[in-house]
Image (cartoon, rainbow, N blue to C red; front, side, top):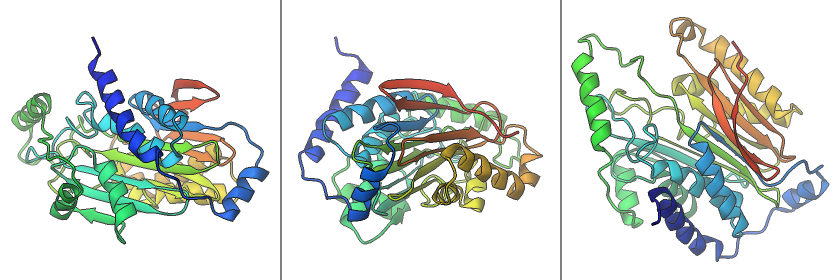
Length: 335
């Protein structure tokens, strides 16, 4: 009998088939030249944040093996987390805000600087795919709130009640214990956003980020995940970077863009994420000093297939598919 996870993956692969059957846009001449001239370390490369990244990488590799691009790989890779109710920081089953409402944020970006994003989505469990529709079918980059839900419905995405019984139970328990002076910074807050980056065999790089945001957040709060340049940035001539953790800290530093700019100036991805975390620490020190659980982390990949991963504090883990192996690894930390 087929298991739930395998059913979800098979369903996603069926949808992938409709995309990869199309002819993909050719690379820019500069991209072709770069791909031919680079010393190829390893391609493809898939890197994703947290434990849910293992399934994301597995799906991403299947997509690539069926002829999909890096963009297809990251979209359908992170959708494995969006569809899994056991992942309570992403998609369906994500923990709600202070009012008991689940709201989702996501963005996606390709090697040609095309980008799409949605935020405060409350009726669709796959915001990353809605973000891709924004990118490919409109002149916009970012759609939010009621407009994003309306757009998703127009694009044919089914409306879904995102609040599961388990998430509702957790929310009711939080409400019971909450202080009248609660500042929405509960020690139970979660930062396990999934960010995923992919480098395919042709040297094309792409990224996607999707999240349900902080548990018990103020209604309407949006973090870094859907913000191009903060939660994600991709440059087809350099590489890509994505983030996870306290979104406000990443927004203040334009973190993912900064990682990519460091790589543009010749830094190895590992050094680039380290230097960016130093900036995060400097800018956010007054908040970091008050909260021992304050975490920010980055992942990065360049066009050579070299990767970087580091957390501000100990505990950040990531999944890496490289050289035919999908591994779950502990990242080094800055402090």
